[in-house]
Amino acid sequence: MLVRPMLCMSLAALITLVPGIASGQSSYPNKAIRIVGSAAGGGSDYMIRPLAQGLFERLGKPVVIENRGGAAAAIEIVAHAQPDGYTLLYYGSILWTLPLLQDKVSYNVQRDFAPITMVSTQTNFLLLHPSVAANSVKELIALAKARPHTLNYSSGGSGSSGHLAGAMLSALAGIDIVRVPYKGSGPALTALIGGEVQMLMASAANAASQVKSGRVKALAVTSAKRSLAFPELPTIAESGVPGYDYAQVNGILAPAGTPAAIINRVQREAAQVLNQPEMRDRLIANAIEPVGSTPQEFAAKIKDEVARLGKVIKDAGIRGE
Image (cartoon, rainbow, N blue to C red; front, side, top):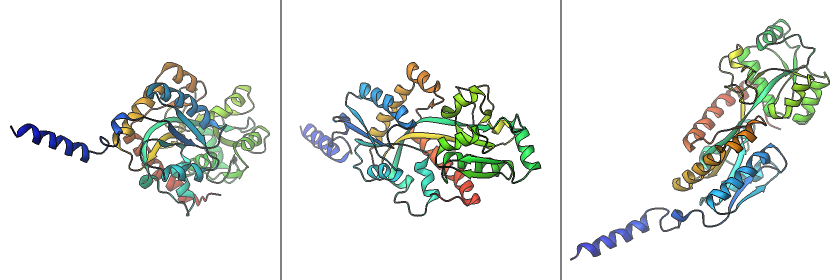
């Protein structure tokens, strides 16, 4: 006769002790979810807004995008938020490269954040001005070796995507090329078109129209795999530079300590949205490749990026602005 009361007491104790049951975690979400990201109007907005709409439809609660200018503002908001799944971060590679470029960064990616899913990757084109006498990566490398410290490439600010991609090519191919900095990726592309510089690593999404018009020529893509949008272009790695891999990564993260059940729920729903045919087609048409990775895969990617890019940054003496 004492078994049932004891069983009830055990269940009550279990509900008290197991994280999430007493806190309403099992009913997540029960209110609006806020995703904090970078400034409005950029490429990140193009990606996150349809994803947020898809999450709203699957989760049944509003998913609000909060744009913040400057990397530190958005990152710090989420790093110090309650780890309850209602404040998330949508950010790109700068999240883990910024601490490699600057000494005084107030956060630690592995300590302060829990990766949820890699949302997308975006490759760069290796672009040349039409006047450059090279029509393949091998020919470009041979030209650079024959004329060291002569070929130049434009990029945005110190530590920008184009800068790191160029520095990685210089290191892995063993060539001496000169960086010419500009105030942003737009002016850097304009400089290439105008013949002020000879080479540029530019976002495929931003430069595709210039390639099609013949104003610049694309030799390869910078990612480890060929682009789904431009499968005819080889990768730099398969063109004679083994190990070359540079692509912009975007993903969703939560504050450290967020329960695994919540992280896994958001990941599953995000992956479902990203795998919808209409979503995939829309993104690929704009040279954005949907991913929808597991939290573990995203964490491994960050670790790999920190190791590889950290070496490039250190060896080249690159410091952020």
